[in-house]
Length: 436
Ligand SMILES: *Cc1c(COP(=O)(O)O)cnc(C)c1O
Image 1 (tube, rainbow, N blue to C red):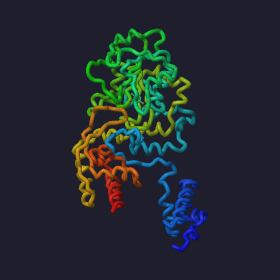
Image 2 (image 1 turned 30 degrees about the vertical axis):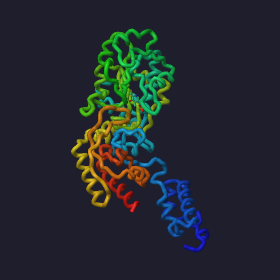
Image 3 (image 1 turned 45 degrees about the horizontal axis):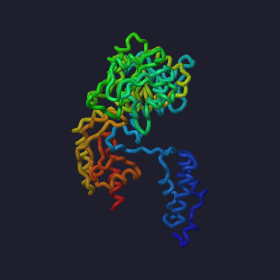
Image 4 (image 1 turned 90 degrees about the vertical axis):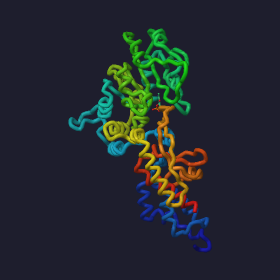
């Protein structure tokens, strides 16, 4: 390095003309590359970088994509982690998204050259997966589905007081419903409601009876709720539609989560419409699914608000591939058996210990998360590391998010797809190396 490093600072034009940086600019856009160039010029100026290393350092400082969202390994043991983007898409869904992301036949029948119904194949996949449904419509998320139902069915919504729930981050379902102009007719008490409470509340202004799954809490003790089948029986002959928001999006009953409602059973039990998220236990893209009676679905689809809530082509592609393709990651994580998880934790811990890291395999408890199955821990296994690993792994080049318990960092393997074990080990070794 020369005596005055400032003289040796490579010029911006010179750096941008470097073939590797020019290629990066073509891929990521000039602004991101310029930012990286400015950063390395500053480092050369303050003497912390040799001028001849500027190109390499600029390349290393570039993001992987032009977007700033980064892939994160979810080792929290929370399968559907809202802060980490909820359900990871299956490879089949990712491929479908990539294929649909250019110009695509989302609303064109290629055989006739005429306009075709939007999202037809995704709807067909939903109906094939939930035979009790006559029709379906897909909107932006389950909150949008609730807003559309409340607006299009209108009038007064009859709902039990025990189901006026807050889902997370200040999202209160009653406030959303009232924001659409619908009136809420609350029935029962916090802990108890009976079929007669509902039927007494019906009147000429009733738009629908709404049942909301209290996804993230349970009420115990002196309680009764009215199950969908009982409510459907009580409403028979009244002409009032029964709408059930089940939240998590299980298609059918799941043996691991016996208390979680599913779309098929809820409709078979007599709900006229059932609502769910696409990116919780279904394991697909963010979406709001509405399935059920054809005439009601048609009313939703014809309502002007539908246009503001409908999903884009990539969501339709991901949803169809999630439904038709191999089991998505969330479903595989849910089904993973604990012996397999223990074997993975043992192998990882042994590998790390052999490299001098204080790592041991321990049993742990994973959770569904995303406001589902709140009191249902899933037996799991984790790699236990010294506490300082938590922060270092989170801020490393390949971010890993675990959690701290009893002074140790735990990396729970139920929420990590098995092929990512190598990446997990590499991230831990990288942190350990940086401390030596
Ligand atoms: C999660 C949840 C919602 C909100 O779903 P989004 O897809 O996040 O809008 C609504 N209702 C219930 C019962 C839920 O569990």
